[in-house]
Amino acid sequence: EKGVSDLAQHYFLKAGITAFRRLRKTDQNRVARATGATIVNRPDEIQESDIGTGCGLFEVRKIGDEYFAFLEKCTDAKACTVMLRGGTKDVLNEIERNLQDAMQVVRNVHFDPRMLPGGGATELAVSTAITRSLDTVEGISKWPYAAIATALEVIPRTLAQNCGANVIRLLTELRTKHSQGVEGSAWGVDGTTGVAADMNKLGIWEPYCVKTQTLKTAIESACLILRIDDVVSGTRKKQA
Image 1 (cartoon, rainbow, N blue to C red):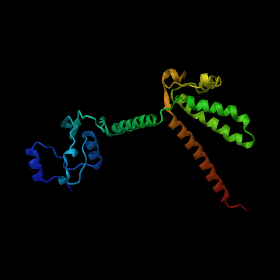
Image 2: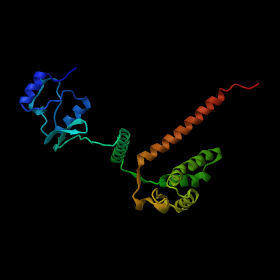
Image 3: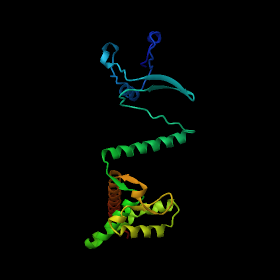
Image 4: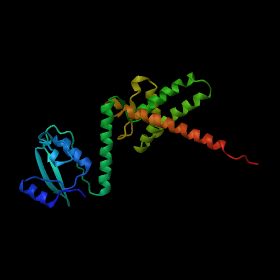
C-alpha cells in the first residue's frame, strides 16, 4: 500500500510538517478545494503555485475515541465539512438523512427558484382545476381525468389524518376555499393545529420542480401498471 515512509515522517516531523499517511481521493479533493492547493502525482513535479496557503488554522482534535483533523479559517474556501454527532448510530443516520434532504431542497431551489404552496394546497388546486374541466372532455377519456383529481386529494387527506383532524370536515372546507378561485388556491392543511390555513401566511412552500416530477412519476407509474395488466390479461389461457 502507498503511504509515507518512516524516514519521510522523521524529516517531516523535524520540519514541523504534518503528513497524512493515507487519504481517500474524495478527502484529497476537498482539502485541495478548501486550501486552494493543486493535487500532483509526484513530489518532483510540485511548483510553488501548487501549494495551498488558504488554511488559517490546522488542528488535530480528539472527539470520543477518534482523532479528527480540522482545517479552519480558510480564505476563499470552495469546500467544507458538516460534522454530525448523535447518541447512537441510528440517530446519527437519521440526522444525516435529514441533512441530505435539506441540502437537496436548497439545491433544487437554487437551480429553479419557483415555489408552490405546501400543506396539500397545490394538490387541491390541481384537483379542483381538473374537476372543473371534466365537462370539456368527451367520451371515456374523462374517467382517467376524474381518477387523477380524486387521487390528488390523498395528499391533504393524509396530512389531515396525521395531525388528528376531522378529515371529512377539513377537506370539505378546503374544497370550498379552492372553489372560490385564485384567492383560495393557497389554502392547505396546517400540520400543527390540524385546521385549514393560508400557506402564504404560514410561509410553507415546496419546490416547483419536485411537484412537477411527482405528478409525472405518478401518472407514468399508473400507465405502466395498466399496461402490464393488459399484457398479463392477454396471455391468460382460455378456460374450457
